[in-house]
Image (cartoon, rainbow, N blue to C red; front, side, top):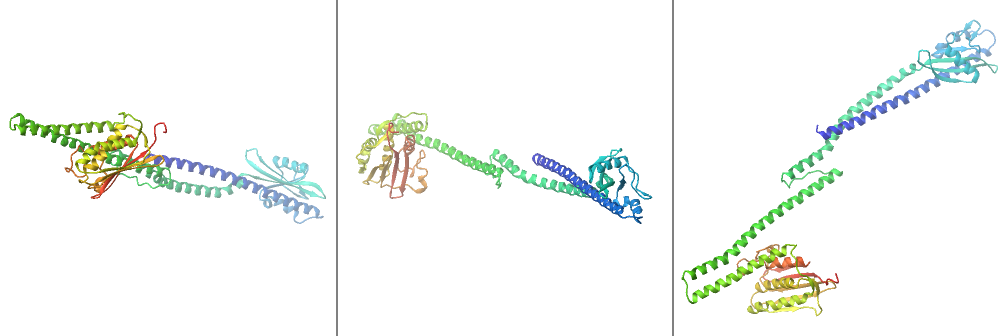
Length: 474
């Protein structure tokens, strides 16, 4: 038996034992009290009956045939020691028949009957220390008390009658204790079982098994604790999976960085080696130099984007927020991408309200966010396809949507569209693969929710949900 079950068993057993002893003692005392009372009433009844019978004998004149015999068999009639005592304390007599001589206790008790003039009861101790019941009644003749009937009986006599009842009670309580002991063992183990399951689950969680479950279904506090532990296990399992995902993302990030850096570095090195070794000369060498310059610019853009994303992800990195008109940042971004749109004969149309859109934020960062979205819309749209920008305002919010008619994004790719270096169609377009990740982080730093809606071969919409208002209004 484990420690808790053993302790519970001892507690239960101690309580049951105290209850049994208390019940036994209380029952014995009550039974003894009522038995003594019953015996005292019976002695009083006998004394009164004998006194009335003797009184009838006294009313009968002349020699009586049964009066003397009645006195001789008085103890048998009373079923105890019986005395008939006259006012002088002497044995009462019918002619030659005399009752038994009274004891000092009986004689003293008879004086109380003569003085009180009625039935009297008492419980006293004799010279040996035994408790003795005394019951008496006056014998009257013509309205005068001529004698007193005294019956004495030891209290131990009726105690013998209590023994069978007490023995039965003791047997019942012993059986109840035994049965309760067996039940307490079962109940203790039943109570400890959920705790054991909780302990096993805790050990498994400590060992890294986050799939463990307590399997405890209880409506008590133990059930609540088990539910919380199961919830903790699920949270730990989710955290483990998230940790694995983040670790994999970190590996992919390093791998992508290595890939993105290796390509321009390789091109730059090979081109420079060809020029330095004299493999290419003249106009061909100039072309190689232009290629080196182009790759250097791409490499610089990649490094700058990586540094930019690292700064934005650092919550301690400050951004300069001021009261501004958000629509001005949007229009500035539209002007910045018109050259790129003209190269593909793409028309960029903006539908906006005539009112200002007050906002508290970093103008340069927000312009950068809109440029990233417009750049992607133009980049993934076919030549000649339109790009539509819509801005709608409400009382304290606004929604800005940039919609293209490009190739769209497959549904399975939407969940990863903001991941670093992620491309829906790898190899089709040039870029660092960090634009959308930077856009998302700028939005988060400004409390702007960004939603991507897309259908393959139909187009994509980037929706910015903004809570408007200047710093003074907030």
